[in-house]
Length: 452
Image 1 (cartoon, rainbow, N blue to C red):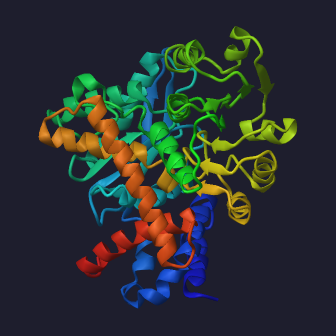
Image 2: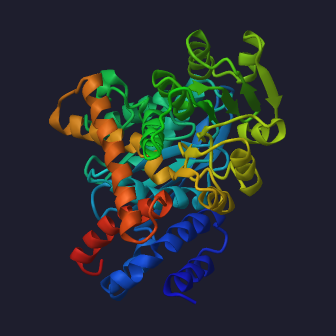
Image 3: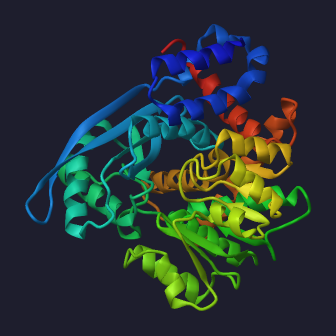
């Protein structure tokens, strides 16, 4: 058994009930095998052992009172995984599925994603099993204030800078930042994803979706193709999916799907103009369900209880570019095979770890241009880093300037992945390239500090 396989077995033994974390660690360690022979100094210094163990993981109680006066208790998390190259940086997720395994997997992925951006940011993640769905604004506010009443002790602009994730948008960031500002009596860049009026950055809401499409465009260019005229399937209907669809439209492609936890809509005429505006209002203002899109517009089919990828498999939906933007493990092996069968040759991940290991094997075996999440969805945290820079400088850059910087960062990430894959004998393998390129920068910094 190889050194890294033995290490993975130790991880499973130490944390036996954390399947999502195991999956993330196994995927990374498998692709790092070539670095062991080339960098024996990393083995000697225990870099691999140290990088799979978080610096610290906090869990805490979050009591709050609903509109009817009932007391609820949720569990809060913050995992500070690695700060070798900068302050811990990673989003907060509010969703009933949140547990320590999911937060650790997300924090671990964030180490390499943040390293790839070229910005000085470490890896961390946090959140709660609180579900904002169906809650009033007042109830969400009360929860956010209660959550920040504990989280504030562990974060700071030069220590740990959280952002949003699933269930945490501009509303939640505003409530949390306002409470932090009140109890600390300071106005600092301790959260990103803030409103423009109080220190946020232009393009930040759009950044993950835009960056996902920019990365897909870079991959397609290696085969002398682009997004223009391509049929694109997008999963999810939150922030990432919304702006992925907008950027597909900007570049001349045709996005034909949206989904939520209740089902999927397919609109073969394309989701643009007033249709895209309708989704933005539906999801961000009225907080409704995607089925309402099918009720509103003609020639739209709604598939209740099915994901986008279920629909691709069952209905034989033609897809050239796939942009998963919903949640982890939404595409398994059989669904990946259906995508390939129906014409998909490019897939860029907007969600975190949306493909199972079996699905990734299908992509690689069929030479699909596969952009893993830690590279393809790094645009969000990259622009969070740009927000941190603007906060530190007390400046606000224009929309055009931030978008140009985002595009350049995604081009740089693409090149880093390409170069690393080539250097380690797997040209075109973006999964390996992303992991190795992200790892090497962090590992060299850890080595420089000695054993910490």
